[in-house]
Amino acid sequence: MNLLNLPCFVPKISQRNGKRFIFDPIRRKHVALTPEEWVRQHFVNYLITEKGYPKELLANEVTVSLNSQTRRCDTVVYDSGLKPLAIIEYKAPDVRITQEVFEQIARYNISLHVGCLLISNGREHYGCRIDYADDATYTYLNEIPSYHELIGLQL
View 1: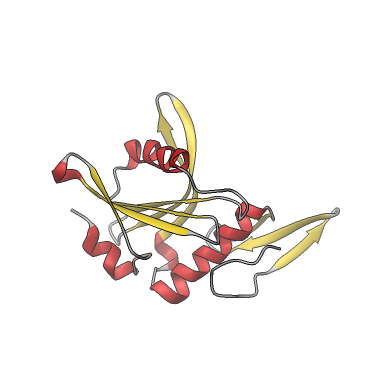
View 2: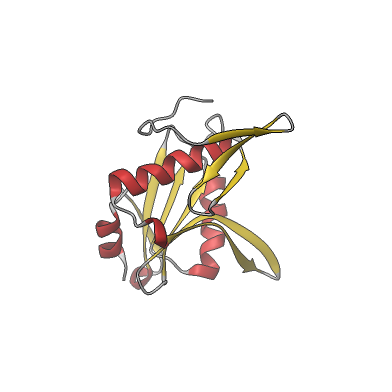
């Protein structure tokens, strides 16, 4: 798989009927090993081991309704009261992170109204804080916040 700008870890990989799968500890099951899933598992591991995110407060593939359509957020981070704090969008390592990607995650946020958006393709990672008191302006973050810092970003 692709080299990433994330700490190394050894994921649980399996193979069935010629297809590769990776164990997702959040969903507690093996899922198809795609380049995007490779990024997700490494990024989630980074959040848990390096940034102090509680595994129990992360959810992968969260369904949201948007204009009568069903969409899926790649990962949602919650507080201890299960209020959504952040949405995370993953792209494959060879996919550039563009304005279109930010617009995609911002659309998902119409439903969840979180205070932080995070995007990663495994090589580049971006985060922004949303200030709802100031007409929902975006402030880009210098780094991915720790869980404690994420709590502090909420309004």
